[in-house]
Image (cartoon, rainbow, N blue to C red; front, side, top):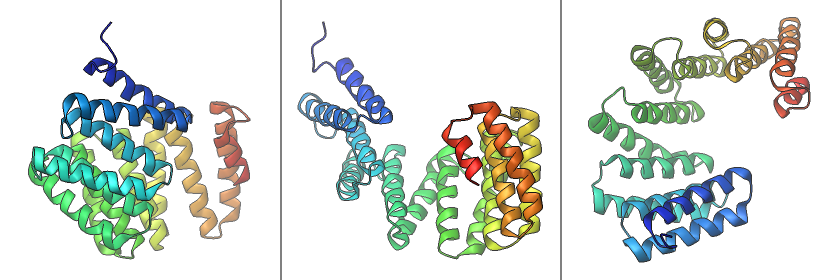
Length: 267
């Protein structure tokens, strides 16, 4: 009724490509992304926001499938086109910059990733505010990079700031706040401050149990993190009891043959 090049038809094609990718039909997903991109270029123009959205989706598709050279080229092109069309600090430009930084994280290229993360975080703070979800996402990504590269003082400061901001904005029991609490706990476990790590994981577990229930995926994940922390310290009796509890909870929530249940059994 509308024709294959109508904007609504192309929006549907873009959504279909995303669904096919999530289902694992990679060949069909790539073909749909490519077809949608070419039609949008022809219909709307090379630098139209809808065209750039499909281009960014294709870049993310390649990145998720480990085709980093293609993904990097597309992310770079998106940054340049969005910078020229929308400005250097437009949220969409910063999204593309964050995507490229994440790609460098995936390739273990911190020297390339760090300046992009820093630039993106500073721009999002100015443009969106210090408590905006995108700003806090940049903060978390930069904290993880600092942790990975041994810059523990910088990493801790960002993890703490992110946790405080999420709690102030969303409340202590919101899943995003609990995710930030878990990230800080895991940082302390990684850096050898086991007492702090255990205290935060226990706090996280209590809040998850109370607000989201024992069978919520985040609750199950927190149980595994606490068990792993005990095992790391050589507290094998505590670790074994927790792992057994994790297996039972996974089995009750997800079934005996679910991959997460089997991973718990393996642990």
